[in-house]
Amino acid sequence: MQRRQAGSERQIAGLAGHYNRHMATAPEAPAATRSKYEPVIGLEVHVQLLTATKIFCGCSTHFGDPPNTNVCPVCLGLPGPLPVLNRRAVEFAVLAATALNCKVNETSIFARKNYFYADLPKGYQISQYDKPLAEHGCVEIKTANAPKRIGITRVHLEEDAGKSLHDGLPDSSEWTSIDLNRSGVPLIEIVSEPDISSPDEAYEYLTRLKEIILYTGVSDCNMEEGSLRCDANVSIRPRGQTTFGTKTEVKNVNSFRFIRQALEYEIERHEQVIESGGTIAQETRLYDAAEGKTYGMRSKEQAHDYRYFPEPDLLPLVVDEKWRQEIISTLPELPEARRARMISQYGITEYDATTLTSTRSLADQFEEAAAAAKNPKRVANLVQSELLGRLKAKGLAIEQSPISMKGVAMSANLVESGAISGKILKDLYDLAFERGEDFPTIYEKEKPQQITDTSAIEKIIDEVIAANPKQLEQYRGGKKTVAAFFVGQVMKASKGQANPALVNELLAKKLEA
Ligand SMILES: [Zn+2]
Picture 1 (cartoon, rainbow, N blue to C red):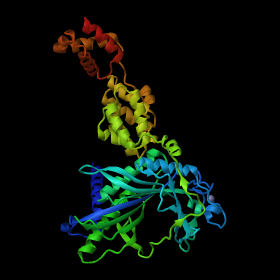
Picture 2 (cartoon, helix red, strand yellow):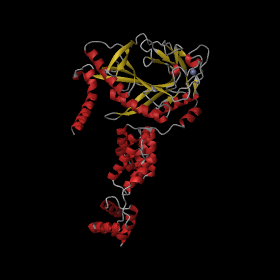
Picture 3 (tube, helix red, strand yellow):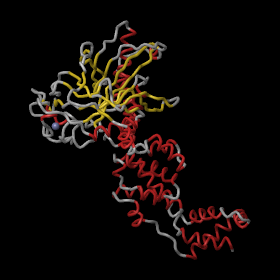
Picture 4 (cartoon, rainbow, N blue to C red):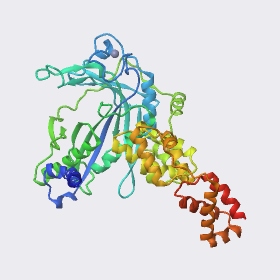
């Protein structure tokens, strides 16, 4: 008992710590200044596309291979070879851009973005500049008050750079090593309008964006492996002012939670600097998650000129109407539309629908189960109340669930027919998770003893009928739906153990007698 209490106290303290962390580490801003300024946030999200090969050569994009094994003269930046555009990368980019409500330009132009960095052997990155693949999109997010549209300025195609390895190698204390396996992996960059006005909105935007991209299947959006990366631009201005304040950029933060924290820190820092009469320097900053602080990395004042010019080795990219239609015909139903349909089709709540569509796989599985169940709403409830909680406790994804959606549908039907009680269902789910077996298997082994003795069931029916004369009168007066009430009472009286088929059969006879 003592231990348990200590444990729950720790948990509460831990939660409080989570919320207090930014307050404790961010510069202190007097409460009065907080409402005086309005944050302005724009996000640049880089997403690696799930093509098998790189964007301008045939090298594998496979993550985690030994360093510098998936390379060739093109992605090593050796002089001479020419880039050849990967058709699949274009198709994936068009799918993503369309899912983000962008207009896909028929002609877009690749451009060289010139800068010098050790992980960029050519001395320039092939990107798109003034004629990007797609523009003018939006993502709808939920805010406390109402839905809000966050504009998407552009979605363009580009190549990834290599990766500097600062640690993990035997001589890391002396050298930085370069792995060029990532050089030339196809990316889309998704640039938002500066429409985001709080760290929470930024978090919500990123969550919705990732959900949409995952539905399209063009990326795995795995932040740990760097297939989704986010840079945030943030400034503040006095409320009501229309011109922007000086912005800072926070780069390469590796989780949405940390981006929210980094933005909270930056906004308070800006407020404090301005309130104390200082000016914000335009610069790139790095977020240290352990400390909860950002640090200046390099000044952006001189670094802005990338001397973009059209890439002479690549033709303009033309996505004509026929090809575009072909590509977007493979676009699946997107999360927002799917939620709306599922709410009306299955009679579930918006909350249910939001949980059940959080991944395409979960939504597919739910719909499969709902189709096999008598009452889809009950399936939705079971998934949320019994399945997701147990999965979370075990740290499992839905794909790793011992109970399949078929199993959930079967269990829902058993409760629906009264064959098992809710309590028995919980016990069977616990067993399924304990043994790692699916529900049908567990049910076959452990199903409650059923009463199949006709005379025993008849006895219960007689008692139930005798105890409910008013309902009997209604039934005999023509209100046949009351039969369900009697079935329920008989199942309850038998503690869920009477054979439901027999109950139905015998009850019908008795009621008509
Ligand atoms: Zn290559």
